[in-house]
Length: 106
Image (cartoon, rainbow, N blue to C red):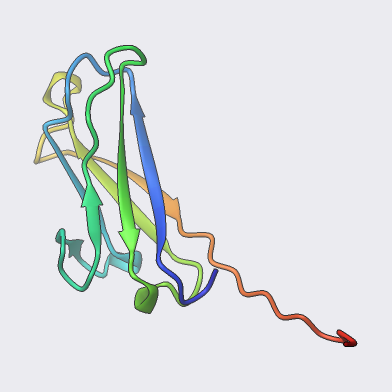
């Protein structure tokens, strides 16, 4: 919902070890998000050897969650050639919506 804290995630598959680095970027190239800055929280996740995956989670503070926005998950995985010079970027939509009830009779 609009104006509430929300979490979005990025699942990376096909891994054989933990990602070398994970960052997130603000919508429309608004810059890199730093953990605990402006109340954003980043959980880089842990490597799951059973599924060969890692899920990273971005918590968006209520004050920044006012409309749909596309955040970018940026990963570095040297084993797959995704280095700091050429990381893998994936867009993740925050899917914000607002619900208004009209015509309700009490």
